[in-house]
Length: 566
Image (cartoon, rainbow, N blue to C red; front, side, top):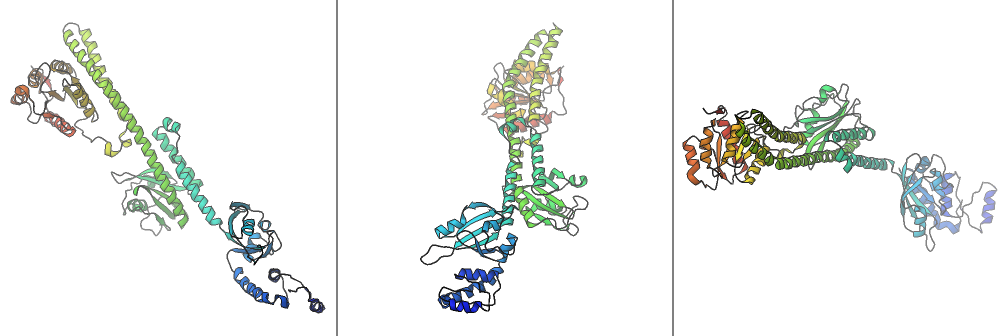
């Protein structure tokens, strides 16, 4: 009931028959009507203009009661003047009127951005927003708007409260998943230096398992990586998958390769809600009822797949799909980082081995040259010295072979990108090649170009050294190819060819000449006495020309083993 001063006679008359409750303002009247039962309302003439407003508020109350959000009216002390049933339900009581707003919600923590939203709204006259968190880990977003009055500061607030718990928790999970993805292959400089590639892979697997189980709550997983050359999906990690399924050969094809092959070939995620009725599904473990498979994508290219399975039908939701896709984006980056580290390690090792070999190759050749020269002088005179020199020669050759084998171990082919791996040329691997040239850069280049294809290279400065090297080789295996400049310091290429024919048969020689320069017509004369027509290289020659010519000579003499001439 609403009554101003000056209406005592009416009130006294009503009190004789009714219990009277007085309210001095329309808002107080509305709050009393909201929370108590009355038989009638008396509004004095002084408040007649407010009667329509009160009626409108009562009508709007029915709308506010049906809202999914909480709505309340507060005074300047944050005392609840009115609240809809939603807020009362969140507060856990039937009547919050008269209680402090924060106390009604069990003193939640104010997370901001405004840490005094109600005070800000009242003093500024503008709406203010903030987020609250309760002890039960519920999150509420409050929006406080002042009730504007003419020629007076605001005294009341209309506050709407929205439950944003699901949104906040999902955002927190997304942030945690992204952070976990970043940490998958996050290694310090010291760890990178001290850890082998295999150790880094095991660390990555361990991190994947940890985050997949603890953060995503998946217990049965399988990760495969795509071999870009063959299209095969190679197993990287599996937990809970049957052994036969884990070892099953799968390819990035949309048919006959299960869901995993379909996802890898299309680059699209696949949610299998019922394995019993899905034509694509191949059993991962006995009793699996549903699965979720997501592609691993890097720079718009599929590099693998991530599969999770469950014994429950329809166990995975769209949120699970979203979370796993986010995790897999970071996982693809982590795998790429690991591959880059492996490639960098292989590149560094390869460069180191090549540098060592380049520094050692020619000095070892010098040792071999000197040793065979000395050995020829002692042959037939002091066999003990000859044997020792032969051991020196063999040890010198072993040094280069050891360096080559160490390089292969330090730079395994799987760690080197296919685009930079030397072309496989089986005929060159293990081929013994003697290069005879006065120019040190030519001898050095021969090592650099042919060593990487597995050739066993030795060099000589002139014809005399070449003859000594060939004669020394008769005690072991001979040379498969002899590459010789047409103009040597002590003789022509043809002269060396003729003298070698007195030592070994046949002579697998290739003659080199610069820009067609052939003093004494060595090439013509050599061809007349047996040099193969295509056994010529014109400087400067391309690498493919060198390799092809060496292969032709090896093939031509493959069935003609060298023998000492009689």
